[in-house]
Length: 245
Image 1 (cartoon, one colour):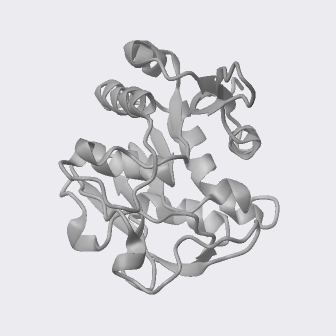
Image 2 (cartoon, rainbow, N blue to C red):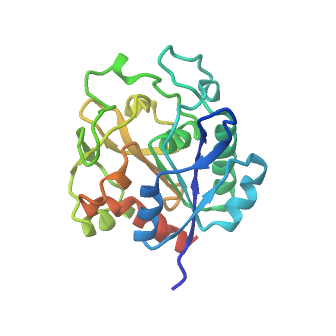
């Protein structure tokens, strides 16, 4: 059976030294998780003008973690703790989401990727969660450390998948973010929250106009797979959705 092609977004890094050439890269864990789930990972450079063609040629898309989104994207001024932004990456990923939605291609968003999906559907992000909650969402601990539990409320279309992976109502997750959707009420009408942290921060949501076409998780399952294979479930969802797209 042909492996679905999964487009994986990348970040910009700069070489040290006087030349300082820009490079595109992503963490190997994303690529390995896509492969383990049955997909063929394909890294996509940040070329906004190519977004529609990338979306057309890929069977599914993975929006990876990284820097903060420019708050201007959701009509806000930068918070003092909002980090550096990457306008080119923003332009590409928002164009990619728009093209994928138009073409019916499934999207998995992880950490920053979940925030891109949230903003693309009309959400306003909390720019610095420590201002509004005492729960640690940005734990400075290497994998496979867990930061907090999330309580899952999956829609019917995800229940069999979660059950097959041995996942119940509560899942312990890692957490490396300081921004996100503060509470369920801050989710745009098009998005359905499916997981919350104990403080009410939305940790996962879906876009499901008829069937689920986008899944977003705020934690980093790709960093937990080696320690606990159950965390491969979002990648299995993406690959299976890509097969039927």
